Image (cartoon, rainbow, N blue to C red; front, side, top):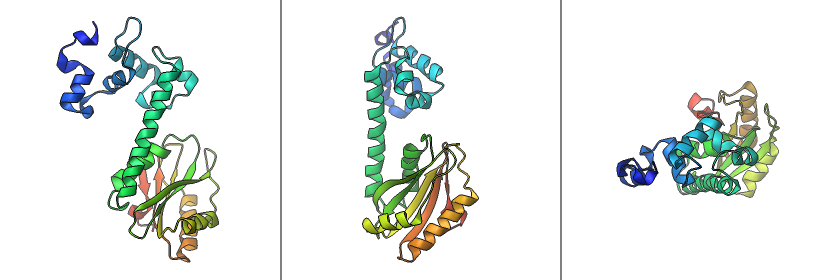
Length: 224
C-alpha cells in the first residue's frame, strides 16, 4: 500500500504538521527526507530497512559516501543532501550560541559541541572564544591528534585569544572512545592553559570533554 493510501494521521508529513516533528519516529523522519521508496517498498519501509542496515540513524548519517550509496534507494544526490542538512544544523546552532550568553545557555552550548565533535574519528581540541559579556566570538578548532591524544600548545591558544580580543574562553575537546571522563593529562594541560591566559587576565571559564552523548564539565566538577 502506498503512503498516500494510509490514514491521514499516520502519514509522516501530515503527522509532522499536526503533531510536530518530535512526534515522528526515526524511520518516519528519514522517510520524509527520502521522499520516495524503492522497488517493493514505500518510503517508511525503506527507511526502516536502512536504519536496520546501518544500525541506527547516527550510523547512516556517519556513513562514508561509498557505503551510503550502496544502500537501497540511496545515491550521491541523497548523500549530498544529508551532509548539507547536517551542516545547516551545525550552523543554526552556532548562530544561536553567538547571540546568547554562553554560561546561561549551557544546554545549547553542549548540544552545539556534541554536534561538532562527537563523531570526529580523532581527538580535536577547540576553543569557544568569548567577549567581556561572555558571548561567543568564535568557535575555533585548534589542535588535532590521533585516537588517543592531541598535542596542545598554550602559546598558540594565547595568540589566538589575543588576536580575537577574547576576555574569556571555554576549552573543549572530544574523546573518540566515547567516554567523556577527563584524564590526568586533560587536567594538567588545563592548568597550564589557565596559567598562561591568567597572565593576560583572560579567564578560562570551563573545559568541556565531549563523549558519546555526554559532556563533562571541569567547572561543575570544581576543578576551575
